[in-house]
Length: 296
Image (cartoon, rainbow, N blue to C red):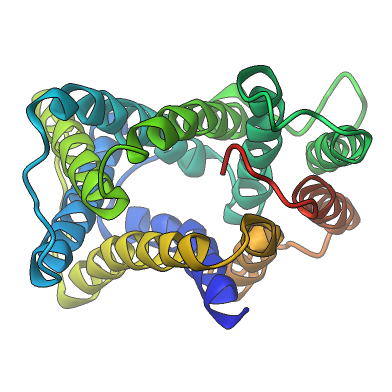
């Protein structure tokens, strides 16, 4: 489906966009407060875009009183906490490597679903898919020797941790979304998480410099891709069998690697990167090719 591929293209473009944003806003790899402020602005804008779109569609924006706490917790985990580690990881790893490492989220989701949902158990196909996918991640981190992997905790480690946090948060968000409008819920959780990142980043001394028409346009694009991709993806899941949609997740690392090569001029055609990409994509295809009725 073209729309599913378009969503994956948007998500894949986030990797080089963040790296470009660090350059345009003069954010150093060790400047975590500025990275949090940068992420916070992006997701605050993305959340507000979804809320404005929801209002224009006539949807009720105010949540039931008892839902504010769970949606706030979702915002603090899925947006704030996850993206603290994601943005730190992007600062220390290449865009291509980050897109491959972040694909571990699909495998974490499949494994966690096995222990949470009675109707979403690990099949032999999914076990093989997870093994193949994690094999691809291992290939991406192959170094001079097994005792000297091309892996750092600040870079690749942070990306994997962010993927794991997102997997847990998605399970929590899925439970909440059964009770309220998923687009409105996401608008609020992104806004709450984004504002939290802004406040903490500013409190810790974070500053952004280099506001130009180009850097502001990039920030606007990053906010738009978050809101647009999620809105389209949610609509596809609503009107199509889940298995037909989530199988397209394998395109995210493909687009991430390709766009990192195009815009960041990264050397992505090393043998280990190509092997890693093939294995990760094959693993995602294996675990999502079956129709899934549990975790998304």
